[in-house]
Image (spheres, rainbow over the protein chains, first blue to last red):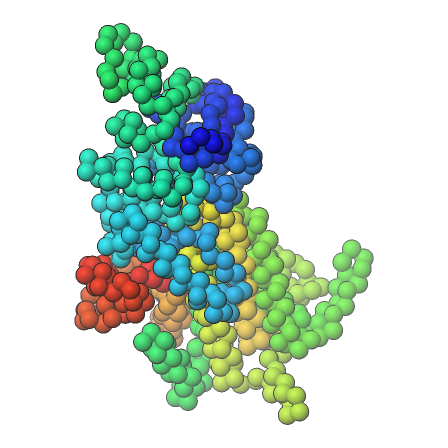
Length: 264
Length: 360
């Protein structure tokens, strides 16, 4: 990826909750097609950064731009309509709807049927509905949930609910996918297949910003890593250099550690 | 299959005036009007999950708008005299829908910034304000003296003549027709992309917005359609009973609608109809041996029992029971008809077999 054009740029963003700076003067970019991981100890401000980017939270200062468009003041659904789609740290699916319907709801952005056309039951509304239903099957097969289509979202095992979240997000056809701890709660084999899924997602030219605690996964898939601690960026670079970075090791393991562990 | 069943039900309803006496027909008409109002409430409460406890306001506004259009009025506002000559009742019906929809839009825009308990308070206050206006703007509404001699609906056939709906049979068919249209409108909405957006924001609002659903837009839309249908019900009421007073805005009517929706099953298409029939017909069944006060106690107990034992309502409970007793092959046949390419996959899964939106 030589022609690194920046897709998402976070410029001097600060978020204060009362006197607490959850994020302080944070700046970094995510290039088109890149997979960037945002890591840091608990409470470092990763999820806050996610919330700012996706319009769930207004930054106290600074600006976020996506493909040249400022996201300041946009509501979260407007951010989604620019192609930025997120998942949530706490598992978030439509628990009382079937897996199929979950993804069908996710396809909302890709239906055009107006209310009047719907009320008149015009043929094109029916055609569109059939097309959307086909798309649901494509997405379910893509993430490997097609056999679960008729089960309730909330009835799936935890690991599969996390997959369903990704399926819903993919249904919205993001150009930038923001994943908030997607493998937390997954067992090792599920995590392994999730890594494969991440690769498939990248093959679709979707840029990914990842927040994750599973260092094995992060080191495996990331092009670049941004490390946060106490709301500040303390390091940034490719996985290999982050693993060696003394500042990062200190943040994760605390002071007084003599031999830094290789895998942080 | 499902359509045939619906058509059969509708055909049965068409024959009702042939075998029922005038008193029961009267009860059925008022019940039908309440059912339309309950269906409209269900769109908000059942599908978007917003509890409007002022829903009777839209009903009353529709009733007054239609009645005043048909009767004409002569009022002074800020020194200007506004005179309106009487229009045909069906024009009143259209205006009732329009005015109620506009109020729904205003309330939607105003109050969907506030959710949950605050929304409930806003809607209650709105209903109370409309009641006070109807009570005190005597020049327009005649206040507690009521608007009376409201003309019944009139059908005009060019070249043939006019038919005025004085009788109960004509009004029955009118209510049935409006009810059918309301049912179709709600059904088409909730089974579409629009309805899915409403359900999505009821189930999980942050997730809904994260995938690009404009929450406010769909809440306002639901409020507008809901208010318009309630307004239509109000207009039907005004021209059937032919007298309306500010008591039409009483809180108890909203409560009745909510009870109908919740016992029947909120978020289901048939719920308000089943709940409406039960609570519409119950007074008839009870009045032989229970005083009105005792009747209210019985409603309350019934409501508590339903909420306690069938928390999702009667319709979902019956449907669940039916899914368990009916033979399996029929089920796979239906699902594979929807998704021919994936029939085998589905038939092997143990799910309920429903691939469509679940909450219907």
